[in-house]
Image 1: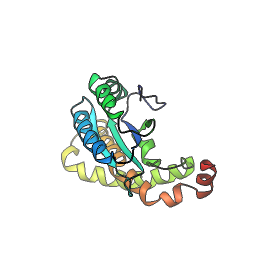
Image 2: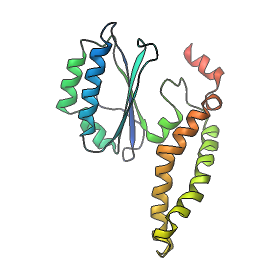
Image 3: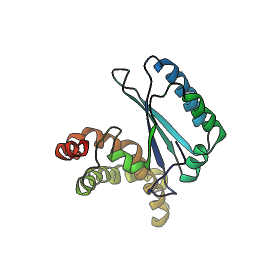
Image 4: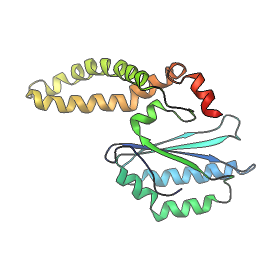
Length: 194
């Protein structure tokens, strides 16, 4: 895997999804390597978390999701000697080339791992409104005791930070998972697989 290629904003949070297909009998070895590499990534500047999705049958794709706060930090991780050495050690148990994709954190919310196609923009807009509406009511109410005496232009900043944080890490991931049956059109999924 080379440096991340992304069309997402180079200043916002980014998510990289790497899918690994492992040789038979090497899963345990891969998992040890993956846990060690994930621990190393956690120490990198701008690291925001890792999710690991294991195949149900043990033989499918292992998916590792890395999140970094900026493109520069993600790129620094990609170009680091530590990562390069880790990937060299992984050659012995990977069955095929690792597929990798980098997206903004919000794009990833709407296109979960294993999703064959992005949902239509109008559906993403409706889900976003469904998430923003309660967040825009809850966050100002929650912060009112702390920011109530500030001028309006200063109150807006913590409210915006709170809403975006709630959307990115709580509401949009949950809503996109719950509404996945509606977001991803089965007809477009079938045509994508052809």
